[in-house]
Length: 69
Image 1: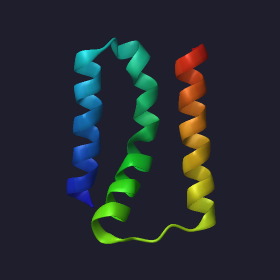
Image 2: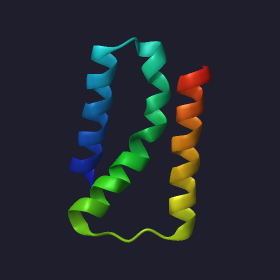
Image 3: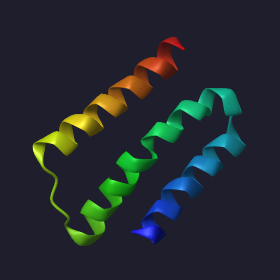
Image 4: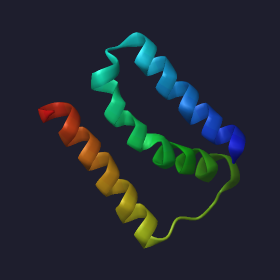
């Protein structure tokens, strides 16, 4: 799990390097969602309904923040 979290943070750092840090800062909220997606892909970890809804809320919030923020 630590390796997957490091991968998610490394992706975030790459995005900050490529773009404006203030516009990329909201993507920090996606780190747990991306880390969980990576564990699902790598290890087949199951998601329950609460986790799926929480992930969708986070993704929608970041999308709205990026579009209108």
